[in-house]
Length: 393
Image (cartoon, rainbow, N blue to C red; front, side):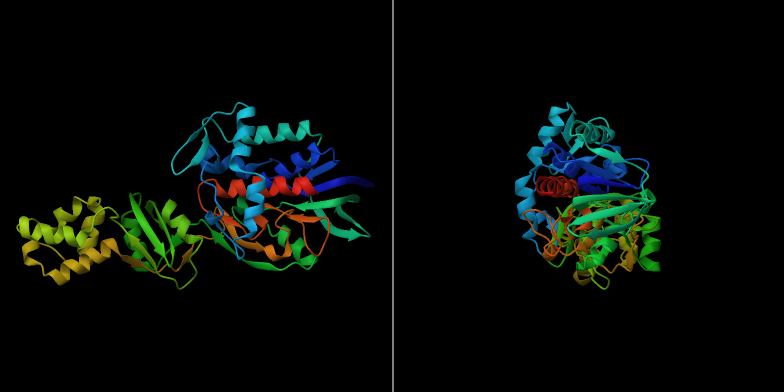
């Protein structure tokens, strides 16, 4: 059996749902297919179940791509305020948590329900638990094969996501389609992911597991001032997740464990004013006690500050204000929030998201080489790229 649609979208995540809504609003006959039983699962589990759906401070500088300018067009065609307006239209209450991050007051499921309702209003046909066995082109039309059925379309939108969170169905399907149509793919890596370390540092992390503090984390020109968390597997928390998107194997990362205080100046002052103070007690006023004790122990410093040389105090202060670590890896796609790399943006029109080589073939969302910072940026990329494809498909 063959069926004909104007637009077929593979993948009913954030980007796919948005593109389906927009194409449907243009009175296109739209088919949206997904291999999952539950639609929008990544939306539902995001932000601790509250969905950090966008950020007030959306700007191209908050995204990573081989071609940073590619992002500008989609973000300007559909802004964070455009998405906020839909949220308001559906009476979904939300709040700003920090750094411009917007979350639902109640549940991420509200976003999923809103998008599904918009699809319904736009007369989108949604098919769940669909296994596609082939995607190809015949004459000027694309088609997908499901069992013994063929579905033809003028425009095919690939919104299959990346490789992150495989437990909810992430796969390389979108990249395979890109390869079939001769599109270049930038190497993919886990991003926004906890980092892992050698045995010595891992032992330290395990002993400090559960402890969190505000840090500034640096890697080359990139830096982030947010929380960091010691875990039994390594280091995590927003600052580490952010820097992981820039980290490559072999890179050293610098961490300032006390961003508001120059520890060496503090120690110099204390040595002059209160020379009989115990060094551990001084450091414990700035850092959590467990961490202070461990850092003093690692640097072999103990006793009254008056008994310690300035060289030793400098070494101690550097291990706090400029702690240099060398990760051995990351926790991988299993816990990564997004995928770095993907479809080369040079293969796509920034205005339409359509393939330059294959008219009518579009790639949107996480499958493209665009990765946002933590904090609602990746969802905004999904909404913006999905909107754009929906206008031109």
